[in-house]
Each structure stands twice: as structure tokens, then as C-alpha cells.
Length: 382
Ligand SMILES: Cc1cc2nc3c(=O)[nH]c(=O)nc-3n(C[C@H](O)[C@H](O)[C@H](O)COP(=O)(O)OP(=O)(O)OC[C@H]3O[C@@H](n4cnc5c(N)ncnc54)[C@H](O)[C@@H]3O)c2cc1C
Image: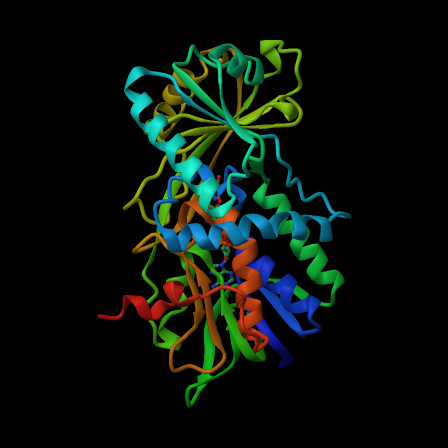
């Protein structure tokens, strides 16, 4: 049996960030990850821009997301020696068809109000642009009715960022294991560690459950219902090299229309087009014909110039969707030393690194700078 101050279960973006912040503070930290097929961090599109998120109607979410967006560049600068990929190419929001103009105008008004009240998006760094200018910014774009350009729209490759966090954690002294945590040890209401399917037991004063959509499996030992379910997302990755555009994709902005989909350009002629949001499919990280049809039809509606792009791969991730759409962060009631960091749903790449920081603060016995009461698991108790 090896002793740790803390065991973090799950090495997606949330668990990796938690381990990083703990290890940096000198906590003896063990991160254990099972590497499930369908882990969300490996499939996420990587848009980090609360101003245009579909979730920004919730004031609690938005407040937390603002902190999270501010935390990113700070964290990225700490990870500079790794290939963390965080960058700000801007974001273009477009109404392609006339029936999207109402939603476009509403989102424009909301951005202006948020900018006045919260400084996000930053004043003077977003404006409506002409359809011609929009096409210059995003060459394969279809003809559009209206377009807004947000200069600070950011993106991150979740897989690369989480990997950078794990490397930095290890450099700060954390131990990283591949493994399957099958139980959390609890004695008289106090956490004692974890045991794994490989037959190992690790003692620890604290355990953080950051198992994404699989988190509820660990609920029994800590006597808490974790209302999180997998929401499947299928996302296509394209090679746009054959289209022959002269401006490198690295400089293209993220593209969003108003039917819930988006396109995220990456260096080396790559563009990711996503994504489905499928509930009730269980733990089935499969590519389906219906998913491919949905995503490719919408991608071509918004950017008809993509029709000769080559299909590289389709990734599938299971978003950890909570019952009310907000993350579940904080201590487990009545169990000393157990913490939850899950339920980040469709915005976990945005929130995850900051959630890791907040949970690490709690584990370290410090008060986080934000009020976490809207995110505590107790909110689901009748
Ligand atoms: C298609 C798609 C597009 C997305 N786009 C965006 C976006 O643009 N912006 C955004 O902010 N978010 C986006 N998201 C959401 C984001 O990817 C997720 O919210 C986030 O990655 C969740 O991270 P996580 O660490 O909680 O879970 P995961 O990444 O799923 O990681 C959980 C890890 O825990 C491990 N684990 C579970 N149980 C155990 C156990 N018992 N023992 C050991 N290990 C265990 C799993 O194997 C897994 O590796 C998207 C998601 C998808 C699928």
C-alpha cells in the first residue's frame, strides 16, 4: 500500500487539471486513469468562448465560465514548455439562412449586454462584419445573411491540453497511473484511499472523483447519487488541403451558425465539424450513419466550399451531462475527504481547467475565489 495526500480518479481535462494544481502545491498526488474509449476530452471540439456558448443563459454558469476563460491564458503560460495548443484565432458567428437572423440578433444583443455588464466579450473586440469580409475570414463559407466577428474567440485541443497538464503534474511530483479504480475506501465516514481492478490499494486522505460520464459508478462507496449521464457527440475531422485555399487554416476563425453546430479550424489544413448531441445512447462511443449525415449536412449548409474536403476521421465522445446542465463540484456531504468534479457536459473544455483549480483549493483546505454553492451535489436532494 502506497500513501498519498490525494488520489484523483480520471485523467480527462478535469482530473488532469486537479492533479496539476494539487501537485504544484506540494501535495503527494496520484492520478489514475482508465482511458475509456469515448472519453470526452479526446473528442471535444475545443471552443473556449463563453460569450457565444449555448449555455450562457444561466447566470451561475456564465459567472463561472468568465473565471474559467480568464484562467486559461494564465494556465497556458505556465504550460509553455508543452504543446498545449491554446490559442485565440477569433470566432465568426453567422446567420446563413433567413430563419437564423432572429437568433443572430438576439445573440448580438446578449453579447453587447454581457460586454457592458461583465466586460466579456471585451469592448471594442467584436463587431458585425459584411458577408464579403466573413468569406475572407472563412474561405469555404456559404453565402450568409449576417455575420459577427469576435476577435478573442479561443480554441484548445483538449487531448493535448490534458496531456500537457499531466506532464506538468508529473514534473511537479505527481504520480500518474493507468488503472481502473473499482472502489473508494471509506471508514466511519472518512475516506481512506482507493482500490483498483489490478489489485492495488492506495491509501490517501482525499479522493477526487473526476471520472467524466463514468463518475456515477463510484457513487455507491461514498453514498451519493451523482446525476450524470453520457451524451454522445460525433465530430468529423476534414482535410481541406484539396480545396487549395491560400490562407493557412491556422488563421481561420472558429465558425458558428445558429443550429447548434460549429467548425473549428486547426493547423495543417484540418477542420473539425461538430457535433451531434445524443442522449439515451448509453456508453456506446460509436460512429453512426445518422450522426455522419447530421454533421456533414449541417457542415455543408454553413460552408458549402467544403464539399471537396477529404474525410480524415470521426471522433466520438461521451459528454458527462448533469441533470440540470451545470457542473457538479465540491465536497461529498457526510464523507470527509471525498470530492466531486464532474458533470461538465458540453462545456467541459472551457470550464474543466478552472474546475480543477477550484477543487484543488477545496482539497487543500483553501477557499476558492468563486462561490461554488450552485454547483454542489446537494442541489439535487429533494
Ligand atoms: C464532440 C464533443 C465536442 C465538444 N466540444 C466542446 C467545446 O467546444 N468546448 C467545451 O468547452 N467543451 C466541449 N466538449 C465537452 C468536453 O469535451 C467535456 O465536458 C470534457 O472533456 C469532460 O472532461 P472530463 O475530464 O470530465 O471527462 P473525460 O474526458 O470523459 O475523462 C474522464 C476520464 O475518467 C476515466 N475514468 C472514469 N472512471 C474511472 C475509474 N473508475 N477509474 C479510472 N479512470 C476512470 C475515463 O477513462 C476518462 O479517461 C465537447 C465534447 C464532445 C464529445
